[in-house]
Image 1 (cartoon, rainbow, N blue to C red):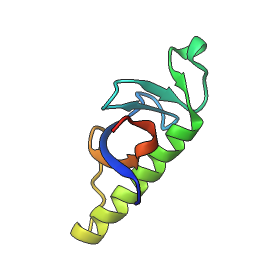
Image 2 (cartoon, rainbow, N blue to C red):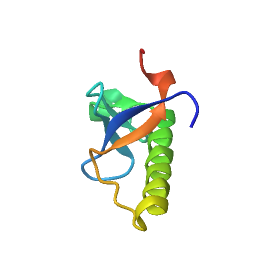
Image 3 (tube, rainbow, N blue to C red):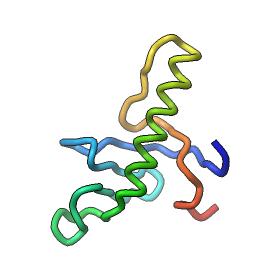
Length: 84
């Protein structure tokens, strides 16, 4: 992936619709705005996180023959979200 940075990504506690960014500590949700769930509303960030997890699983599968990404592991996220 071009223009990416390796960051820890955590799954939401109850669903794939929420994530926690290990770099900033911010919680993001695809479904609920911040004022309702105390989460940052960012469907775009969550979609990129899902794609990053899928890409990481594909890479791990090619290298090891199994998908072993777990919450809290590093993925390659677009660097547009981070100050470099």
